[in-house]
Length: 206
Ligand SMILES: C[S@@+](CC[C@H](N)C(=O)[O-])C[C@H]1O[C@@H](n2cnc3c(N)ncnc32)[C@H](O)[C@@H]1O
Image (cartoon, rainbow, N blue to C red; front, side, top):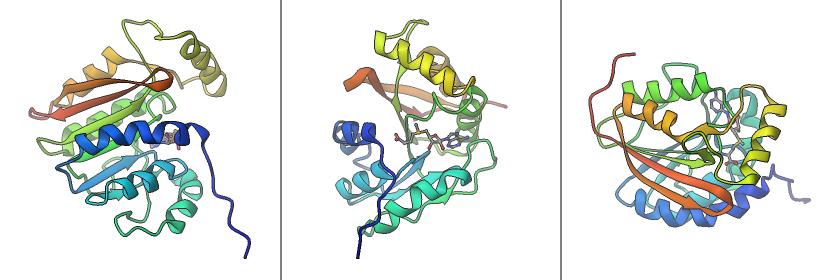
């Protein structure tokens, strides 16, 4: 039988080994991870395989579930949960919120209002001690960290006017408002970051 051609992202292939090195530590004491904006499922299937003690829940917006489902279906490990639809703007989210959340390359794609919704939902529903790990590009003090990120931002704006590399300080402010304190900000290959917050405080009012 011919093998199904699965949706594919080259950047996922390039970054997944570097990311999981950190996730192995960050999520070492966690039993379940909610992934937001799972895309093709390359991260979900790889991370589930590499972190066998964690149940990995992939999600996508309803319109992109068809990109996520085939690879998840083809995966054989028992700790990958069937993908479920999740749009961060459709609140309250119709998923359980475990004490570990991961998302990659999503905050610069979704509109900033959606980034706000994401943090507000976690502010209201995540329990104390929840770890949130976000992978992707960030600007610092309003500056690009590289020429290639500056070019990428122009390309992003051409794809969608509300997509943009986010300012780290602004996102960290949303996290703080939601009760999340910054734990780590790892430098990653290709001018990306892996930012880790932990919920330590009471929920702020929305
Ligand atoms: C560049 S892709 C990243 C996919 C994958 N995480 C990766 O690293 O390759 C951005 C993803 O964000 C998702 N997304 C956009 N708006 C969203 C929203 N409101 N809620 C949840 N996901 C959203 C898109 O459907 C898309 O799959």
